[in-house]
Length: 201
Image 1 (cartoon, helix red, strand yellow):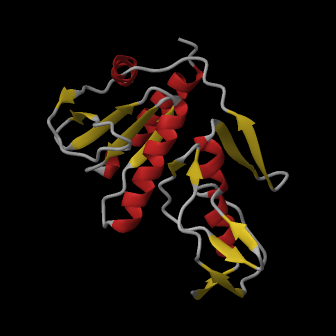
Image 2 (cartoon, rainbow, N blue to C red):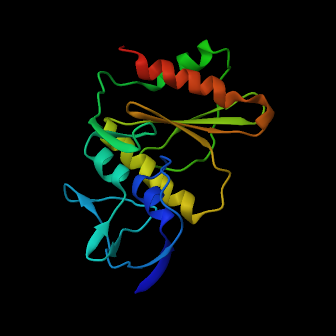
């Protein structure tokens, strides 16, 4: 089946959430005949389908290489994609994450909120204040965390949701679902995740 997509979409499609800007817009004909991509025998959950163009298969770089234990980064200065082995010296726990959040002056109240199961992990959920929600997913490895994020990206593309702030910390995913955006709690949670990422504990 042939469809037309804009040329500038290729950069974003290939690299996920990292911003890459391409040449001026033009249309190309592509074929969506790749049914799946599997890594080590396991099918990757992908929000965007791979496609063929002029005999070349285009697939999301970030999803594939991160599922293999690598990290991706867009270098705006050199206009290049950088791929390096993920350096995860230690793993984080739910207790470490919640303590880091409390250290930022935020109070957490346990709450039986319902949120998505991602890569077979049910989040531990908390309420901050009256309506703000935090959902914490802790995995056994960096690669399992990547797969959890990919599953969420698929869900996000298929549903009309209040898109949360998503933080990736070593082997954990932290979702912050804001209610009062004027609180700007995402800034404090970004500080939390930055500290956890640089922590050697």
